[in-house]
Image 1 (cartoon, rainbow, N blue to C red):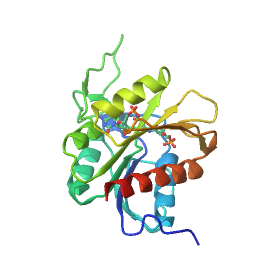
Image 2: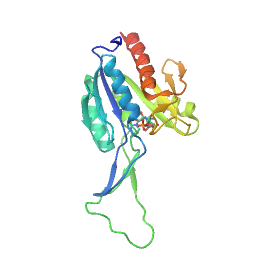
Image 3: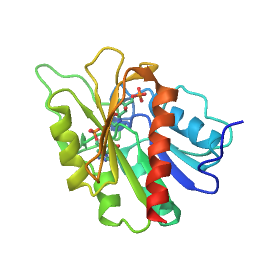
Image 4: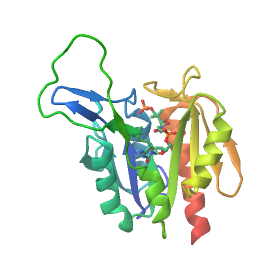
Length: 221
Ligand code: PMT
């Protein structure tokens, strides 16, 4: 029996990709499987937390014991997270949220025509940044999916999004990032601590992240 280190703590985890509709049959998305976020949910439940999972579309089975909110788009995820935010002790944003969506969503299937097609895109709202601006008692943990200059971009996101910690993964590294059962991450804390982890299963990565969360929670008491 695992120690209930997070007993009574309310934790919201986002996971999976978002889908941004182009028309009734097409969308823009990314390769997130949801595995990293669901692993965090699973481990947090084992550690006694009261867990809410806000998930984009995935093929994964929902860990039993979690409250689940299913969403499709970045806008849906924003609304689902914001409405629950005031009540949370911790938010962990593992989801791979689309940064852009089609400016026009066609109500009928687009017909193909001769020549090229240009899709005009507009920015989605940065959910994590919004949470950072509204932050009160909550611990805010972000992820950073990078392919170059991982440390630099991760630290920049830690600062600009007002986070307590960011978990960075080099998504081009073998065994890390999207779709795999393993990950290689480095945790950057607001305090300046940098904690690199070796190649581990996503379950083990989740456990290590939550141990840091527990330490941060202790620090805020
Ligand atoms: O799902 P898996 O297949 O297991 O893959 C795991 C993962 C690679 C998706 C995961 O480990 C990961 O890196 N998740 C973050 C993906 C991402 O969108 O990173 P980013 O660097 O683009 O965004 C930085 C942070 O801002 C993230 O916490 C993201 O949730 C958040 N964000 C981004 C855009 C946006 N509009 N709103 C946000 O909240």
